[in-house]
Length: 331
Ligand SMILES: Cc1cc2nc3c(=O)[nH]c(=O)nc-3n(C[C@H](O)[C@H](O)[C@H](O)COP(=O)(O)OP(=O)(O)OC[C@H]3O[C@@H](n4cnc5c(N)ncnc54)[C@H](O)[C@@H]3O)c2cc1C
Image (cartoon, protein in one colour):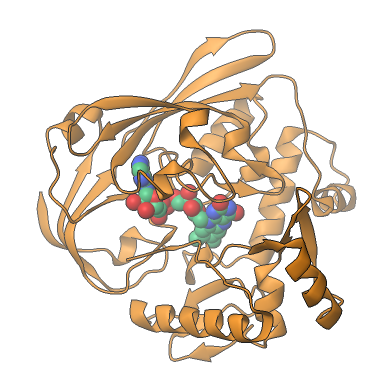
């Protein structure tokens, strides 16, 4: 176990904070030997969905469990078992190389495989739940390994049981995904088709991945050069009746129906409408091209980013009467 460890290079916001204690583990046995873990503790993957507002006064458990194994195969599909510490995009590249489809739309999402089910990562019309089979997690008090089916994970929009009732109780060590050998390409987001057409690329999982990578590199800042945690806020889901009132006031507001009674709004559009895009105070700011992304220009303190986030939430509530929830975990 290490003491007083800098976390600056272990999370994508790049805030200069330290952890009181730090330990990395590469298999379940190592993790089980640390149980019961005394609070406070935090399971860390790639650190791409975190904002540290202060030094962390507890133990960081860094998941480094590796391995990608094919455990079942038939004519149509493969079942893969993947270590929670595998980098998500490395898994995407591995499956593309083998020709397995299903996660090409999730190319270039930062972070680890173990964290992916926690917020049911999603992009361009696909979520991990679409290919998810099951996972194994270690209970951090009992040390027991437990299996969670798709149903038990209770996935929602950027949400799962691990963000709610079971928050902080388990470390996800292995994830099973069922991928397709016969391409089921999803280009429901028209922008993918536009890029494919422009570059004259065929409709394959590999070219969809290339298109997604191109779009993401154009749209989102690279954490290696500008600290950020991707979308800071979730897109708010509101009732149809509230939406009808807002639409009168903001006729050009983008929206996506969710079932019969709710509507999802574009948080980035709302924040942009209020003039926040490109805002900067000290080293904390709102990205110039993407209002949903808060950035650290170098030496921002976590509290400065958090105060900016709270000011955005308050102004959105004042004008739109809509509560913006954070997608990023605030510590
Ligand atoms: C530039 C950028 C773009 C992004 N784009 C997207 C996107 O398109 N779609 C999307 O969904 N997300 C996106 N994200 C957010 C982020 O990539 C995902 O949430 C990712 O799954 C986080 O993985 P991580 O390993 O970095 O998790 P961390 O940030 O390390 O942890 C996040 C949370 O999960 C918990 N956790 C981590 N690992 C485990 C584990 N093994 N078991 C239990 N709990 C665990 C942590 O305790 C913490 O609460 C983006 C982030 C960035 C920086």
